[in-house]
Length: 380
Ligand code: GLA
Image 1 (tube, rainbow, N blue to C red):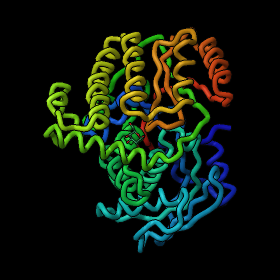
Image 2 (tube, protein in one colour):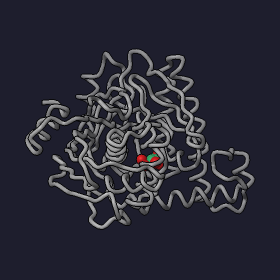
Image 3 (cartoon, rainbow, N blue to C red):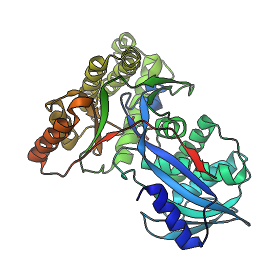
């Protein structure tokens, strides 16, 4: 059974009626542009066919009641008196989004419903952004709020930064809010302007889950952010988006570690713009080479890869039909992404799986993913 049927079924079983609203918000895979978003730079993600769904109906009063079929359990929360996270776990993403919406001055109505998703958690495919945007979509539907993708992405990011306590950039929420079928989005993280970039013909995007989950990502992620901010200050710019390699070379006082972090960001912004241009002219080999270069830079200069991610990228690179591969998302574990010739997907998956298993003894998960639309009400 598809998730959309499963969740409708679960709603009927719990609430004894048909849901009046069904929403879907996707996870994402980032093709290129990693650790650039919080440097005001460029990213090139696509929304994928793995998503968080919610089936719901409005209720009178201020109490929301939500069942999570995959996390297990039911939770309630009051829209009045939302002040701080106090329970932990999945429900805090919903409470955080409700809080962030109310902070923006939205007057929310309550709902009850079921949430479920098939975005693997902690795998670098933005399961939390998908849950945030599904929640925002649900509240927008029952509270009659206008849907502005960029504004809602900011709400999700605000909830994640201030309520959940993860200091993420805007990429994940923005692509979950604004994704478009068959396209990646070239997103300017300074202005939130984006352009749609079609996927090149005759290639597919394969997600390669290493089966490892990232550990202490919060502290390492925040440390990278601080190093980038320090490098920007030393180069005399507000954000590394505005620096180039010449300015970096002139920063003689910058410590070598911060300089390497900055070199990654500066190069990655250039690669991301070049990747979008390559896609626009259907040049898949050029896109693949840029993805390869991105991985090397993330591994050596930004140091956010892991032995499992490196082994997966090596396995992908030597498998038939592969045009390029890199880690995707924050790093330290989770998934890689590869660009593969469509007519060689089966031998690619077989060879990359076997090679990775031999190298690591981990159980990988490889799947072809389609680019889908962003958060939407699927049925009312
Ligand atoms: C995580 C964050 C994003 C972005 C990526 C790295 O996914 O949530 O904002 O910084 O890492 O590119």
